[in-house]
Image 1: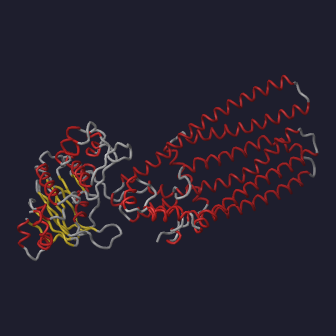
Image 2 (image 1 turned 180 degrees about the vertical axis):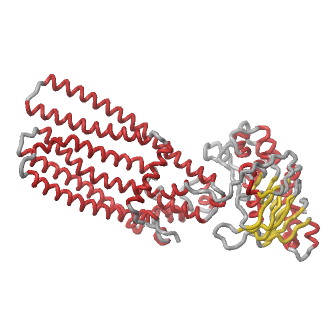
Image 3 (image 1 turned 90 degrees about the horizontal axis):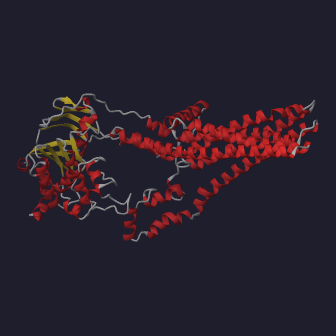
Length: 628
């Protein structure tokens, strides 16, 4: 059961300040010019606002005392042009900053993806990271993520600048006070501050209630009618892909999809929980903020009026000082509110910041890998045991095996017997909990990971093809050898389909994510592409982890036979459910319940009638007869 979002927890002032500092530090690291430019924009915007107020006050005062029209008109024209130029500069700067915000947000997303790609695979597959990703999803389920900081932060800066500007420009107002005016002013100020304080407290309570609706982890019953879950119920994902519609069309699933999406959005429960209650909170918050603004104006004009009664305050100055005083009241409350919003946005990013600060746990070796043209790499498993993160059961137990140069090894066994785990440990996606894996007598942990990885070409069961060009999928690189790509595709049995692609050939895009001209491929064709990728790498060890599961037994046997010729003097390891496909191998290793229970040739293992291999073979014998 998921815990409530940590956004509902109370934090100290120091903790909130630290969160904001961390987010600002990250933004600065992504674009060091953003904050200085934003500060210039705020000062320019506030300067233009007070410049307009001063101009209005100046004109009114001149009208009240009598004026030289031509002189005043010339001054007004000059100042208006100056303000217009300032406004143009403000617009240009604002647009440039908006572009920078987009770029920062893109870099921020890329930083997260890069971190995930470079993390230890054991961490990516761990419950710890899954919980962290769920927290990030929950915390950013509402709002605009890092974008929120780009408008909330400037509001705080602007509020501070507005207050400072109002104090500086409105200071001369106090020269109009005399005698008892100060006591009456103090009473009005006290009442005004009390009203504003109560309003702020009520607003805070309403905001916290809104936050509960936003960040409360819904129960299973609530999920059935919450608008941000109904599509997940129906489709399993927010992100609609064109391929998702095939089953809906074939099985006429429109009614059930409509029930879990459109119909659910019309239910009373959803309208009450996800629309009505948050809407009432929003209306209440906006009404209170409007009320505070009105109170600020009433109080400001009341105080300025008291000052004006005892002196000859010009009309323009009266309006100017009232606006300045109202700004002080209003923006003081606004700064407090926006600081709260900024602290909430910063809290939403804490999960991402923790992800970015996450350290790898696997030992990082520094020993360079010996490069041998003869591929004389001898690998040995020594009493290796391993449990997946969060599991109490051993996926591999006390496993020992040697891989000799040029050897053909088949690994067979039931599902969950440890076959794929052995491959993952060999490729050092995980480290053994017990025992060690040696290359030419050296523990693989001591080698540089990037160099060690170059020893292996692997086709996993869950291989991935990217929505990029066919050649880029094979080379896994932007730069590639075209002839080599074509040769690998032919060797993998993809030649017939390649001939159908016409002029674009290996430059054709897979799938339709980037272009409508992208090609769709079958499961069997996809597996051939994955095998072609393994051939292209030319690593000394080639590992096939059931890559031909979507092919029929005859096609599988053909690919294994062809691949065996392509592998040449390389060491090849094959994992397959179909035992008949592995008969050509020098040695067969049989796994059962995480342990190596048998090794030998096909004939030797079949001779042991009570062994696991003979049991599996006899269970599949009828299919082999059908092949014959």
